[in-house]
Length: 212
Image (cartoon, rainbow, N blue to C red; front, side, top):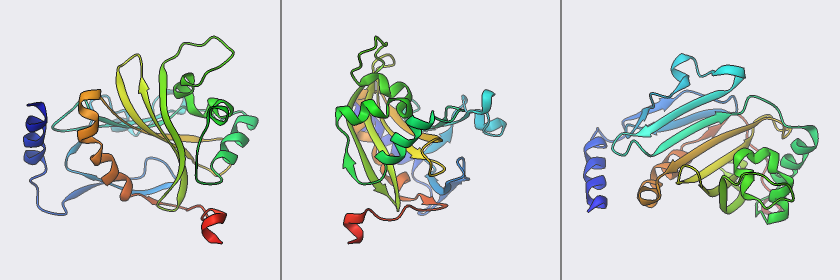
């Protein structure tokens, strides 16, 4: 069966000495540290091999699972700041832990990029995304937006993080874990491992409900 094959391949690539990891040096200024296991390798599409900067100021780094190269981890910045109203909406959305409803997703559509096409709109736009769940959560001391969605064009499943890089809502940095549907469930533990290792340059204060 496929699952057995992937497990056997994973064992081969994770047979390195316990604790052996590669450190991913900061891609984003707010990301002080993230640890990648030896299961990941830089993609040949990785613009980071040329300093992490693509055209127009965009940052794009991609990593692949060695034993399932179709599973990828992307770090992305669209190269522009949000409109001030959109920035304020995104900033306010990240003020507390909660699940987002349709109306709030509509308000932060610009921050979501192509994922925002999965939100119903009065305007006729090409629907690329189907959103399953969106919620703001505390990731190691910083509030970030996590979205579980499908890309309808590429037929891939995603967990995406949207980060307020500078605290004013205007610069949105993105981390995307994605895989074909048949490989998603059995490989997403790699994302969990990676997220647990994150250390931020600065952390957000805890939500008021927690601090009380």
